[in-house]
Structures are given as structure tokens and as C-alpha cells.
Image (cartoon, rainbow, N blue to C red; front, top):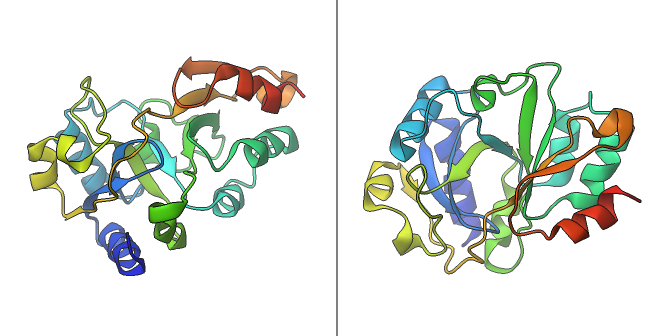
Amino acid sequence: MTAEDAETFARCMTVGGVAVFPADTVYGLACEPGSETAVRRLYALKGRPPGKPAAVMFFARDLALEALPELGPRTRGALERLLPGPVTVLVPNPRRRFGPACGSDPGSLGLRVPALVGPLAPLGAVAWPVLQSSANRAGEPEARVLGAVPQSIRDGADLVLDGGPLPGTASTVLDLRRYESGGDWAVVRPGAVDPGALAAFLDA
């Protein structure tokens, strides 16, 4: 990955493109979260039902927190401890932001901020969020290497970035929608972060 790759990725997003890119877990698909046309294309490439929510990925934690000023202090503190990292966090979305990414549940938002180190560090310069989902056909295994991304997805994308081998375990999906009021949280999908580590962050 180079700075030029990151700039090309950002341009692809601004013109409504769909890209295959490396995250800190597995290879992903990305598009502009406000473009219904781009979102439909991404979902079609995956074979994903159109009403199913996807995550919005920011490439820096501060940008994510600035974009969601309505989050309460308890939730914001948890995000500051958890992110960046291999976790997708479900948070309340009272202002119905990023509607195309929320699918049939506009009151909830899936939030991702990857840990971009080593070869992936140039992506940290991307200043705008993207709608993100794993680069695989719905229900099939995630891709740890670019060659494992289905050929139909690579052929259908406007940009394909190779970040080399990735860890290969998808993000843990964590529900913080009731965390602000009562400190309640739940793991919706096990993944790259051990639940014991989450407890250390969230039950303190």
C-alpha cells in the first residue's frame, strides 16, 4: 500500500465507485455510504439482501467521534478505549445518519475504525467514511488474501487494492446500543477480539 493507493481509493469513493481493499481483519468492499447507487452495486456483488445493514468505516477514530456528536459520554468513552481495532460497534443512531448503510434499522449504526499499521498505514490518510462489508459472497468465508476474493467481485469492482496477507478473522460485532443508560453490552458476533478483553474495556 502506498499514499498514491490511498488517494486513488478516496477518489474512487467520491465518484460512486466500489473498491476491494485490505482492512485490519479481512479484505473488504467499500463505497460511498450516501450513494444509494453505489450501495446497490456493492450489495449485488456480494449477493447480500438489500435491507441488511452494513457498517460505516472511518479511517481515524477522531473523525468517527466528530461525525457522531449525539453519542453520550459513556458510549464515547467506550469507543475511545475500543477503537481503532478489529471490532464493529453497534451504536444508537437517533439522527438517522448514513441511511443506506442502516438498511431496515435506521435507528442503529454499525461503526468500524480499523487499526491501520504497517503496510496498511497509508489508508489512515483517507478522510471520509465508507460503507464497508467483507469482500465475499454472502454466507461464504471471508478472504485473508486477495486471491481468495471471488473473481466475480474483483471483476465487478472499480478498484482492487492488494494489501498482502491479512489476519483473516473478521471483526467482533459488539452491541453498545444500551450502554449509555445502563452499561449493558453484548457480543453479537464473535471475532478477532476476545470477550474477556472487551469486558476489561467496558465493565471498568
